[in-house]
Image (cartoon, rainbow, N blue to C red; front, top):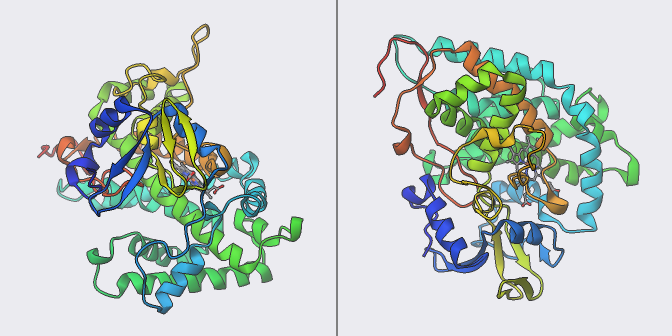
Length: 416
Ligand code: HEM
């Protein structure tokens, strides 16, 4: 029985996944809500499922609990019609246009702006830590940075960034965590804001990536409805994942001072290795989005997934498959250092695989490789202000990362 809401499971799901993987590369698991799902935990089978067109990304009609019609519900439905919820050939067209906008040249051109945003955030964070009180690195750094960067990608004017940050926070929070109506109001505000943004970009294109998408006329370009869902997908696929990468990497380095020192001593080789190893060891997306088997599929090793089954590819488990990664439960960035004469390690699956492979992987890597060195060089006395083994983690099977990360910024305060 798997209870994704269990705080102990959220903090450390790895022993559960290891037991499951030891029984076979995929298994049908009963869930605490009374349903069941196929969880794919083997590395090879995870990649096979993600590349196999017999598994569909289109949510079945009427999926989830029925919801009363309301403006918020209509906003959610329109924003949810994005390419991660489509299969070929619809997906192929949307994907081609998006991948062109996210070319390495376009993404690398964001470097100077990302550096400025990181430095501004660190200055703001420093000013919050008065009198030795701990500050939350998730709230002050790991959450706002990806939202600000996606604001750059979407060409959101600076004056609107605080609104974008507030709506994103509300829409991403569990309904019962905020006052009644606040989450619904944020869905509607985000929907209306993106509609207006698209109209503005059509009238006055900027030099942002999203303007390229709005004005790309190849294959007829994207419709307003497709652009609306795309803006939402970029925001949501990009912020929570990168937030978890930044938070987990910061936590791992604070808990492994020797790895931090090694990265600072050999920055050009070691920081990229820290980022890759964090992606493997602490996969920010615990599982991919749900797939549905359109027919029975033989995955090998005696595993037959029946037609109609809901399937979750557990990236966090695949990335710790001992058949592909030596000593998988150890955080060991050096495994990703280039070493002549040594076989390259298996690529981690943190960005997925196959047709839906992450469009923003280059941007996420760039962001982390800029933000982490700046964080540690600007705040050299950074220290944990809580026991890492007791930090609360985000519940659920989709994303994984600490909910809060209390730190001291100066050298004088004592760790609780
Ligand atoms: C550490 C950060 C990130 C991680 C771990 C991550 C991971 C992933 C994974 C695993 C998928 C595939 C999901 C599936 O197959 O169900 C995906 C898809 C996607 N990601 Fe990312 N992502 C990250 C950052 C970003 C960023 C910064 C952006 C853009 C701003 C982005 C945009 C997308 C989009 C648009 C898709 C859908 C691609 C498609 O359907 O073809 N991601 N991501």
